[in-house]
Length: 374
Image (cartoon, rainbow, N blue to C red):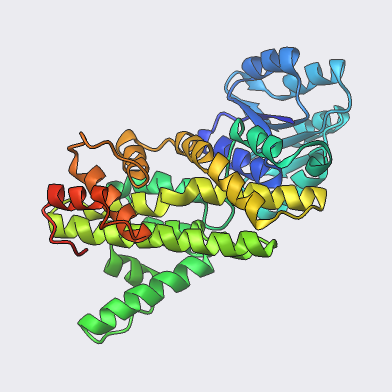
């Protein structure tokens, strides 16, 4: 299922991509910022849906739609624009577009609109579970939940330049984030000064921008409540608890050893994203085909797909190499490794799994100069 997005604003194109994938994980998105490039792609590959901004650097997307209509009259087209005159809207209507959306738009409403425009298929009728997940590995894998995981990671990567005011603006309508940060910061403030924390801004200032982002990241990964299959929901709860435990242990170890602690905490939170993505895809498979999965099938799918899905997500989110390697170190680390942050992450993973007293665990403790306790 191919979607053509034509928008010169990279942030807007990324948002549209995220919404499309949220409607159907099988979507393959092709993004272009110029009319000519989009037209060339259309002539060769076609598309099942087109989302196009009206005004582009090299002209109007109406030219693209004219070419589309000359060869294919049934493809749904949704036009978007911040500025649109009556004449342009009428021209677009005469070309048979499916609708016109003014920017800025409601993400929820656009999501609903796209559900009616994207071709609907029953995944479970034509694919088995492995085929369904394999198809997702080659497309954009996105975890459900609000706030948006990829958006938070982008903020984390430039956290030194992000202000508390910017986060307040971004999260002003995020009830779950506000409640969580107020609870955490309020507890810390009460112990330190006895004063309550009553605003989102005060909570972010109390925690610091990097840690506030990490709490939001943890919330975005909590997909338990969105999994209707009881075994999947329980497994998600278990995996998320493991990720949080690794993050907390890595943070404590980093502080103890004089290493930057927040990056280690972030890597710990992301240590189970492949598993969580696999659970989401299994839920989609069950829902689409009205099928049930046994505990054994779920465990086998996690064993087969958590790693490739995790690798795909790390690429899609454009994680910097040190963070990718820190995440990977939670699960495996060669003995010749000397980078302290990787040793910390591996130790945190072994603490969480109860294997810190194994041969590898004892070796790590000696390398880190630990006394056997986290």
